[in-house]
Length: 271
Image 1 (cartoon, rainbow, N blue to C red):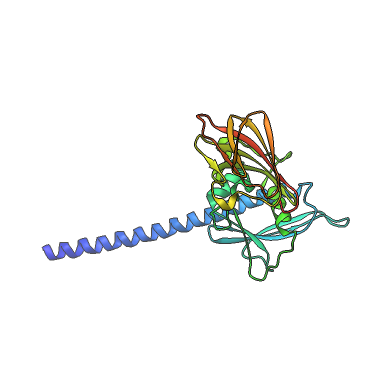
Image 2: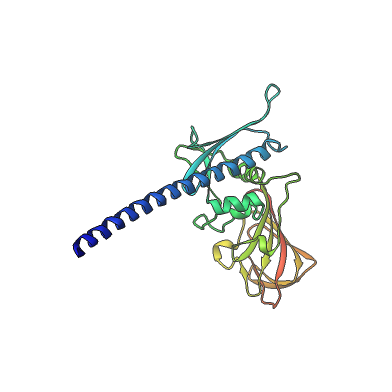
């Protein structure tokens, strides 16, 4: 009798785990399908918004990799004979091009306007992690103007609404170059952003971050900082802007008890 009951219990347990595995894989499949639908829905929203963007004046074919899955976006600008056209399809672009690399969490943040795309892509060095990055497919050969063009395009494609607005302040920043930053806009010869320095933070502490081949202007809007320029220290108070020539080493320190905030402008050849 005990043997029969034991066999019966084992059989029931096998049935239970078999049923549980079926439920698990069905649920997993549903979750993956729902996530896929969510990604497509979000990308469609960006595409629809960009379709009406006045800066949409040239064609773009690119990829968006979200959690290792690739999507292809084809954006055809309007001509005298045809209107703008944008398609979003799952899979790789048909020809070598650039693609964005991100994850569903960041995609949702971009969709909700909780972070700006250029801020999500900010990093001090090419080896740093960024939740929105840009990679090139094998065989893609970018032109010399590619960096400026793609950063401007990144802003306009991933920024919805009219006017295209960028939220800034402490809670809209990411850590980069030893400070907190929110990027406003990049274009050929122009980089603009917002910086936030907590007490004790040291921007450009890394020696490789201290010089640029182009000019900069820092506009201090709150607090005070110590600007170390060519190893000479200057105390700067809010309400002042200071110019940094090309090639000058510059570090910005906040040894004070309150946070400091500033606007950063970088401009000229190479910016």
